[in-house]
Each structure stands twice: as C-alpha cells, then as structure tokens.
Amino acid sequence: MYKILIADDHPLFRDAICGVIQSAFEGAEIIETENLDNALEIAKQDDELDLVLLDLNMPGMNGLNGLISIRNEAPTIPVVIVSAEDEKQVVLQAITCGAVGFISKSSPRAQMTEALQQILNGNVYLPPDIIRQSSEQDSRRNRRQLMQKDVPTELLQSLTRRQLLVLERMVKGESNKQIAYNLNIAETTVKAHVSAILSKLGVHNRVQAILAASDIDFSNYLRR
Image (cartoon, rainbow, N blue to C red):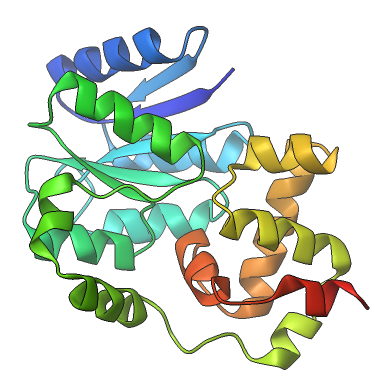
C-alpha cells in the first residue's frame, strides 16, 4: 500500500492524477493539499509517506525554493515535480535541487502511470523528450554537474555496515519499502538510515547520494 501526497492548487489536475494513481496502484492512500505550507506540515508529520507530487507553480513555492524547503524538512521522502513548464533547463534544475522525477502536466495518462511506477520502484524519472534532447556524452556531463565530487573513502568508512547495505540498495534503485523488505527491517528504520547516510556523506538528498555512490564497489567496504 502506497501513501502519496498530491500538492497542487488545481482541483482538476488533482482529480486527474488521483485517477491515475488509483488505477495503477490499487489501495493507495492519497492525501491532497493546495499549498506549500500544508505540504510541508504533512511531510514533516507523516513518516509513512512514500511520495510527494509537488506542483512547481503552487502558492508558496517561489520557484524551486519550495522544493528545496520540503527536501530540507523531509529529506527521506522522494519528491516529484509536476508542472506545465517542462523546458530542459527547468527539469534539470529540479533534479539538481533534489527531485527524483519530473512529470509534465501535458503527459498522456499512460506516460504518467509509467513515470509513477518507475519512481515508486526507486528510479529517477525524466520526460522522454528531455532524454532525447541529450546525447550520451551530454547526459554524463549533466550527471556530474548535479553531483559534487565522488565520495571520499573516509566518508564511506564512517557508514555502519547496515547503512552501507541500505546505500547499496539505494544505488540499485530500490525504494524504501523494497529495502525494508529485502533487509527485513522496518521502513521507518530505513528512513532513519537514509537520513544518516545523507548527513555522513555531506549530500542534501537521495539523488545526490545515489549519483555519488554509483561507481562504488560495496564488497570492499562490507568485508570489514
């Protein structure tokens, strides 16, 4: 069962995305709000949220500042930007600021469903048009620009064995629910580990942690 927060000031879009979620994820619990302040309060108070869908132009957002605020307040909850503004620069800036995906409001229903499935499976989602605009070389450069340097060895060594196991599964694209199941621990425990990992690695969000650790051979560190 997924719990998803939709934060959007357009009732018609909320109804539409609710329909997509209910069709694709039977039994999903949906919470709705129409401004950033309420979204922040809900995200801070509800540890069981699996995903936040955040309208880029909703009251209180002030561009991507709203995304940054919610990432700071609830760093372990994945946030996806939904917007009618789907220019490449806006999309990449959203990912830089910690979004795990970007869904255009003009996307067909089937594409929205696919996007949500990928995100809830622990992957980052970008609109197909954005992906096609970038060559493979450009895409690699953008990934590096989104990240700081690779993780220093001493920072990785500061992680506990359990945190390393969680980070390894994050890099594989697993969601918090999947990690909890595979490691046989509570989802709240996974979120606590994710928060500790972000702090120890000196990154601001899950996406940055995954990009930083994408080339790590975890077996070298798990032998300890």
